[in-house]
Amino acid sequence: MSQYKEIAYNGLWKQNTGVVQLLGLCPTLAITTSAVNGISLGLATAFVMAASNGAVSPVRKYVPAEIRVPVFILVIAALVTVIDLTIHGFAEPLHKVLGIFIPLIVVNCIVLARVESFAAKNELAPSMWDGLMMGFGLTIVLAILGSIREIIGKGTLLSGLDLAFGPSFKHYVLTIPDYHGFLLAVLPPGAFIGLACLIAARNWAGSRAAKPAPAGGALKPAL
Amino acid sequence: MSETIFKHASKTALTLIAFSLVFTTLLAFVFQATKAPIEASEAAARMALFAQIVPESMHDNDMLKDVITIAPNDLLGNKQPSIANIARINNAPAAVILEAIAHDGYAGDIKLLIAIKVDGRISGVRVLSHKETPGLGDYIDVLKGNWIKLFNNKSAVDPVPAMWQVKKDGGQFDYMAGATITPRAVVKAVFKALQYAQQNKALLFASNSKEHAK
Image 1 (tube, rainbow over the protein chains, first blue to last red):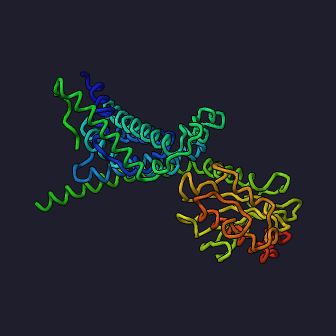
Image 2: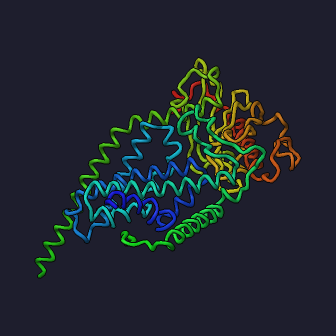
Image 3: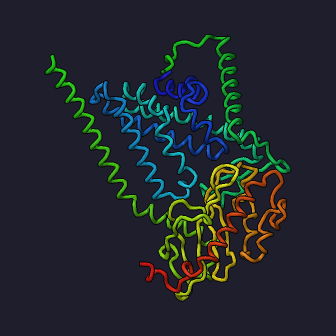
């Protein structure tokens, strides 16, 4: 496996932040009340992770070990603020959907974890690729969890799409007729139950795949 | 030995300072560059909200700039001074947009925007923010239902004060089964805002408060 393939495999499946590393659970649980919310936060996080990994990797040799964490946090916070201001100024509809989540990305420990464990030790291109893939791995989990909770809880899928992309997208919203929703799925317990099911499914699939041919040679889990 | 420590510490500190300076400069630059677009888009968003409750025919002024400050009071539920926007036609006041806060919702405060016409009737009510249970109490939001439009054209005396309650409490306002606390809080807050407008008519509908306010 080439380096990039391995990074992608790690981010999307083997060390998936959402269901394997279980980092950044606060936004994962809080935001996934609908598919659009989940995907939006996931993509924003992926973008921030790629940008912060990309910003840290070239300067990693100039940062003394003792102060690397404050420097990394400074870089991440500054980048997130820049992205937040830019979206607010030039893409108001998108900001309406994402607005409250973007500042949350600063405190998401996945971002710092990838900067610390990958970008601080690797070249620019693999670092950015790692941030992007880790972010996409999270996006997939958020999208599945958001869809499950939205379908069970509200009987709709992709509601709120029109807020992000304009009224013409309203007819992409799917609705289950005559279903009024099982409220628990949208409330906080639904997040825990849904995520638990996803983790169980991931573990089941992982152990099934591992049995016939024991997996080996892959990267050691970070953190 | 202590000299090495000192050298090392100052090098570390300088690195941190350098990073802080670079990124502060970057932030300051982006903040300046996005300031005007952000203000414009926020004003546009607020104006779009105003347009829902004050029709175009009811104002020819810039409602965002025509404001009076309202001191904290119990009828509006505001603990900080709030801003009321005035709609005018040919300088004559046509309506006032008040912000009211209901503290007795099911979960946290419900912030309302209430437009009251000069004759004391409601032009429109919208929920600015709320934390009511999704799927249960959130029908007060116009995106989830038309309930909030029940208030249109009502005034403090029509219906009579005794009827300013949800049906369950003997009033005339509908509610959805299973979520009475939310509409009860909203009805109460709207009625209190109407009373406030009645009591402060002179202040809210002064012929040209903009010039006389200061």
